[in-house]
Length: 202
Image 1 (cartoon, rainbow, N blue to C red):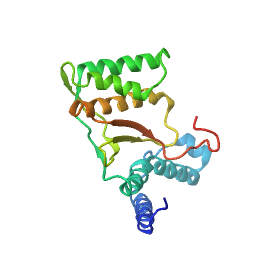
Image 2 (cartoon, rainbow, N blue to C red; image 1 turned 180 degrees about the vertical axis):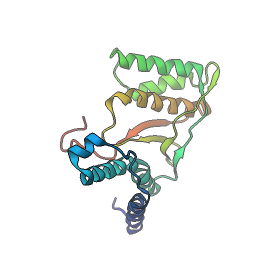
Image 3 (tube, rainbow, N blue to C red; image 1 turned 135 degrees about the vertical axis):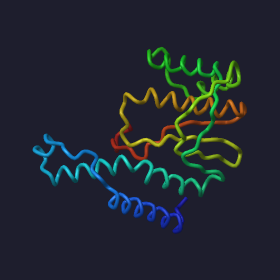
Image 4 (cartoon, rainbow, N blue to C red; image 1 turned 180 degrees about the horizontal axis):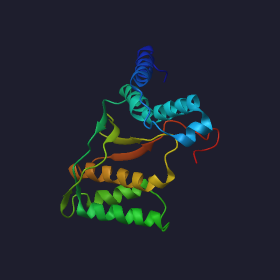
């Protein structure tokens, strides 16, 4: 399905606005970097600092709004930076911890549909606990009520953080199911491009 001229124009405006704002508001985080300055020189260091800041900013300023514009063509409900719930059952928290422990010790392989089914089974079982979850970067819902929750990451997130990413995804599912045990929910990490192309993502 080709993209409409209107959507292309919207995306162009997002890119232009984001870059203009970045140029207008950019302030280097650290003023004194003696080793970097001597190694790279002031001009190269300033350029490096700006590009690094731009990369960090891409998620919220570019990837998220572009994803929203693209999703609006296909999904009747599209939201960004939303809270999926404020409660998770104690039993669901126990299941999530069991899943994380099994993956950490390599005594189980990741199996998202099985993991969600296990959480669904106990989503309203036991005491309901108040939680403050990370906001969902992009939430889309199909016409049939299927829910997709996306955590948009940079192209190469720190490998050590994936354990916490996994917990976040499972908690989003648990919080959604605590409100509606019949929900058909999917929580995913979205990475905008493959930096290892043409090889598979490593």
